[in-house]
Length: 304
Length: 167
Image 1: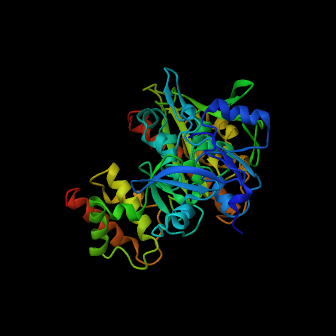
Image 2: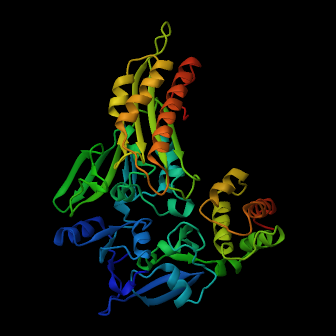
């Protein structure tokens, strides 16, 4: 049943400072709402349990993208449109730019924010695997101050995070050091726009550049969405293939290790078996692309 | 945006916003959907409700020039914004171009998706005056149609782009 708007309170404090002060006064009482692409869907379905909402939409402090020498610092209130259109995001963080481009449709990209996506903590979110492979860090803010922590580990369980009740995500910091890596991203869903992924992947790889030798995997980072209760980085798979030559045996091995790391489920969109098969195939496709770039000595950094 | 503008005891607040070029004041609950305020307070029923959860694009409007699903906008967030609906679009030149192209190319059948389709198409041409077919598919990917079929709609957008802004 649809919600009755008279049952809800919504305030827009207008500044980041005022917002965190309100959260500090009554920790846990206020649910922050940015572009509403998740919260308003729950509201429409009559499933929004929070009755007091705090609008952080369009707070200028959260809508900036700062380009520093070593990192790109993205305000948590930046929309997918902000990300996909930003010159430096496209150049240095192509996995994030592509994920932004295939999240929702244009209208949802104009409203959905990167911070909202992180806090909503859907294991199927398209942009979160990209944050994992780029070694993102989060800056959290409260009236007590700021703290910075790695994004890896931020999700502690299905829809659970390390965010405290009086905190907001202020920014997402992404190092620029991966801009020379081969990047690979793919979403497998019923359709690209307006469809939640059955499986999605973001991966980065770097081959050794000793011309006399068959190239080996110098560094590799793989993350998947919709295969576990949280967006999952495949640490064991990465460790296993690191330093190796990409051959048929390695592809098989990578699939086997990945299959042990993921914990896919049956749900409305797909089955565990299908997801496991697709996840393995995506990893193989990534490694084949990575090998091909070595063979063709193509310029690194090109988006696959 | 300012602290809950003009809040009164019953939980409603007074908001000012611009709708189709005209300044408006309205007294509403802050969590009312922009969609409902447009339809019920301003009688702008060209904006349709389809799914009510941001999947179908029937309720698309432009908010400060950005395409949004008005079913997902709590009206408080539209405080001070300029909203353009299909009615406002129909009143000025470039939209007539888009509407005309939809008419001529058979881009509308039952009409429920059409206002949203046209707003999404206008938003696309604002960004890319000469879009490719791929751009059009992407620009309209958040707008679902269940009867017209997409090909005539894509043709209409291509045709409108061909005619250019002054046509």
